[in-house]
Image (tube, rainbow, N blue to C red; front, top):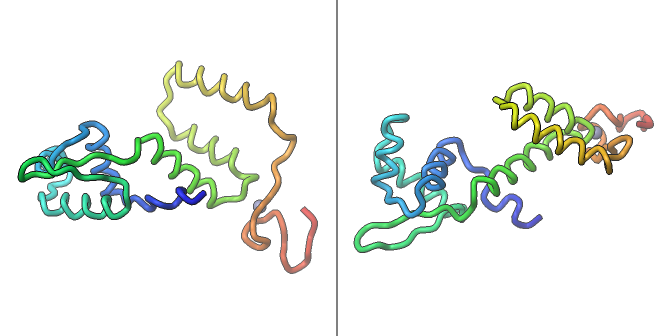
Length: 153
Ligand SMILES: [Zn+2]
């Protein structure tokens, strides 16, 4: 669990920079600005500020190449997405995880093969799935338990 919050939160602006680093490992800050100038009109100094924050969060590392610095992501996109989704799931009652996934599925762009893969993943999960999910919330932070009347679940 210690690693969990190490790189969080990655801001939306920082995430845009991470995407460039995942696509082009070892890129220089000037080239990152060229990629993002079109989308956001960011100056190179803005990109350098964002890179500095990401280095402080240990999400990005630098390497000196002559007079320039090359930048690399310390975390893969999948690792960061895994941290972000765990972070999101931790914000709600465990009993509501299923409805959150259903909501995300409604919003996601899904191909036929994506749906095939999701279906087989769900079929696998069904084999060992419990009948019900326990609430682990602080009483009063969800509707499962009422801290004042000591109502049973
Ligand atoms: Zn709960």
